[in-house]
Image 1 (cartoon, rainbow, N blue to C red):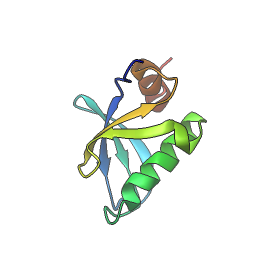
Image 2 (image 1 turned 120 degrees about the horizontal axis):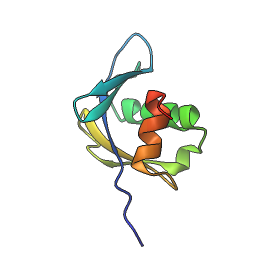
Image 3 (image 1 turned 90 degrees about the horizontal axis):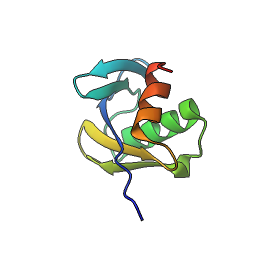
Image 4 (image 1 turned 90 degrees about the vertical axis):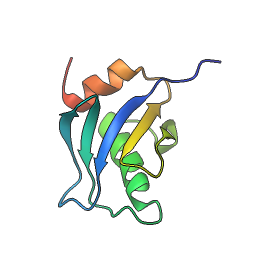
Amino acid sequence: MTVPEGVVIYVQPRASRTEVVGPHGDAIKIRLRAPPVDGAANRELVAFLAKRLGVRREDVRIIGGITQRRKRVAISGWSARDIIARLTGGA
């Protein structure tokens, strides 16, 4: 069994809207409307990524940084390169 490498996502909670901002150092910055309270921002991040990438919510996993702004996210069956390309509009 292989462990997914995942992608580093930098989240900005309590934003005016949920959206992908773009590269942020070695991460991809995503603004989230939800506050970082009781896991609300994490739930919104998972739902946003699932919708944006066309996968089930169950396929999106936060594998690191659950209580931090810098999170490592994996999508079942997706490589980090594929996730980055779809989120940033690359081919």
